[in-house]
Image (cartoon, rainbow, N blue to C red; front, top):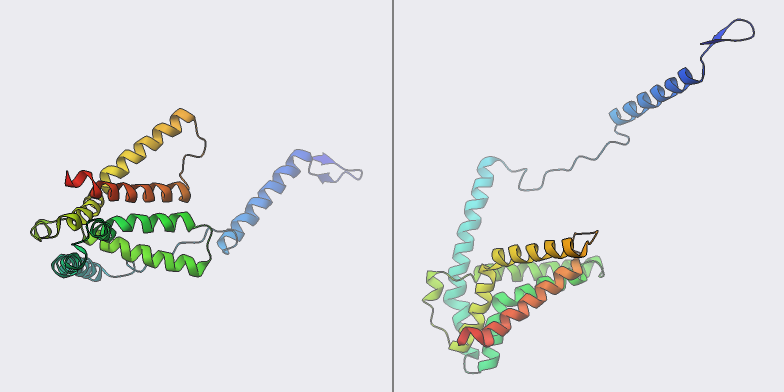
Length: 219
């Protein structure tokens, strides 16, 4: 404290600065308590708002529906399509590949256009890619699927895509490892891949499955 002309005490520069900082902190705390400047609380998603029994029922129901759809797909749709296109070797392979292998191409197109199209077009791309991805998951080969008799060229396309879906965890691990090594060797600052590289990787993987079904799988 310092004395003024009439002997009155007044705060010096240091104490005045401390008082200003304390006032600012008090104002900020008051604003946060009132909701101003506070971080918005993310609302729980639809599934998280369900009760425990409802969540269990949804999981069990979804699992049963997935198994039923898998059996229905392999018992009806895949064999019937094969009966139509099975006599044309190249066409039958491509059509068979579309069930699961085409899903990766659809996801790749979605990733490539995610940041460049309007909301309506993006919503349509998401619907197409989502439905196609579900069909691809249902194509994962099981004991029941292995017993279904299909024309050889058509079978090659179907199973190339189906095995491609089953191999996704391994492929994801390998691609992630290669990307980490690339980032380390090239010293890339932004190590998070953007949508476009991811899209091209998905499309390349889809094309690789088609090539595999057209050649190596039948050798």
